[in-house]
Length: 394
Image 1: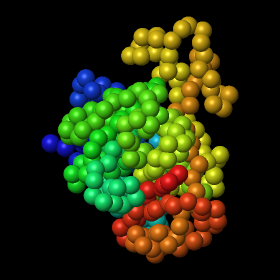
Image 2: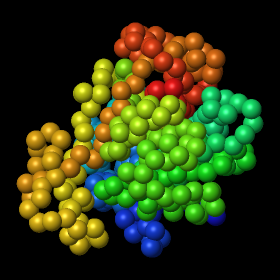
Image 3: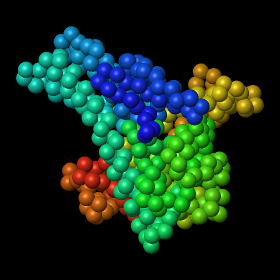
């Protein structure tokens, strides 16, 4: 039985409450956008692809139940209003924002079509949301397979096994299934080319310890859980072949936002000469932003750092330092994500790996992507451009 973060059938949406993992596998039903927003904000569901999927599918459930309207204009306005609520839940990941833009356009275009009715608008939006689920699963498989082959070519072309270090959770629990960075590890394991996996605990929310370790044990993939502070020692002494992480957003110059701690991993990997890869679906790419400085970095409640399962573990009166100077209701906050500087993308590599023509043209128009290309980066893609892997410091 494969691990599922999302269970969907027409009119019904359930999510695996990841706050209860690994102790309990509890599926929670969501029947509205408001419930989905609360689940996303509370991190019952997390991971950029999964956030977008749950958000859009919750809207599909509402629409199938007859929400929105009366009238085409009111229905389109309802769709857009609900999507705005979802985007605001966790703003750093671009996937939900892109899905909201696309779904809003789908609703508006269908409403303008001659002969359109409320029912046809609902059906069109629902079908688009449902297609997202199937596409994400296929894309993740492509990321895993293409990413594994590329990693092996770059790090161990003679046929041996590799040891990979990963951060946070980028597996089936963060996507429609299989995963992005963890999908690469899954594919390496299926190929018989994975020696070992090191997964970081990923403080302060412990997604690595609670979720990635859970997935690795579930599928019997050889792995060791390490504290975040052990990563440098693992690279120095345990034969780490590569670091593979996911991304919440990749902008035009290649800068990447991902879980807090990713930045320091990239620096340590560079110091030890270990290739550092970012694996993400094209839905995580945001060409509208030039650099990482423009990314809105989410800040989480300080209790996630000072408390564990509701019990205070930090000294009273010690305040975590907020990244932006903003604070939560308690006067404290902590940044949820960090950024890595990326080079660009070489259009020749795009062609070699079979990127679709429209995407290559888009890249050529984005001068920020191509102007400062200094190191090897690769787009891993089928004709529909499911995936990218960026080698940041190889």
